[in-house]
Length: 210
Image (cartoon, rainbow, N blue to C red; front, side, top):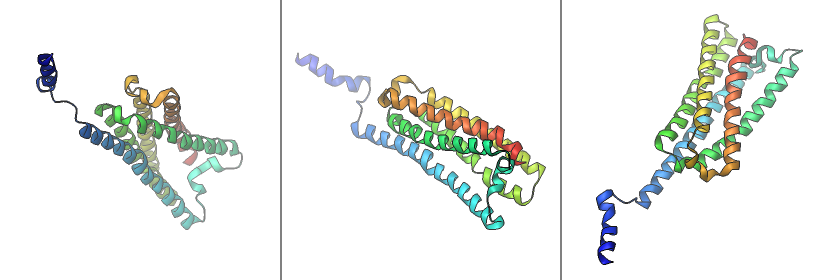
């Protein structure tokens, strides 16, 4: 019995070091900070570009309606209201998407976590150019600039879809801590957010803005 106990105690030395609870805890916090930093921190910077764009247009033209293009024209109220509803759903969907990632982040392999956060970060960064370019286009329309806007929105839309696929493809064994309800709602919110960006923003909005 004594020999067996000695061998058991020696296994961590033979097979590798035993997990350090303090180190594991620090790793979990780093993962959580990564998720919050990307989802919320960089996300707020993106929202800042929207606020800046609205304020800039309001200052120069007394209204920011120019961002809607012909979507805001008489007769297109149904499209404008559809857009409003979709924006609201995308915003509401973002919060369970965030909650899901916060819950499962400590259990995810670094590669999976970096993929999810990296794709969302890339989406945010490309999206930050959208409103500033729109403000510039409204001030001085240009086919070249409009083309760049379309390319940017296409790239952002593709990145959003890839992000949603990455989230929904996370290993089931590593997302069990979220439970079925949070996982379902979180993935649904992620998918709708990506849908809005890839379809309404990248495909429906551009021809109405030109």
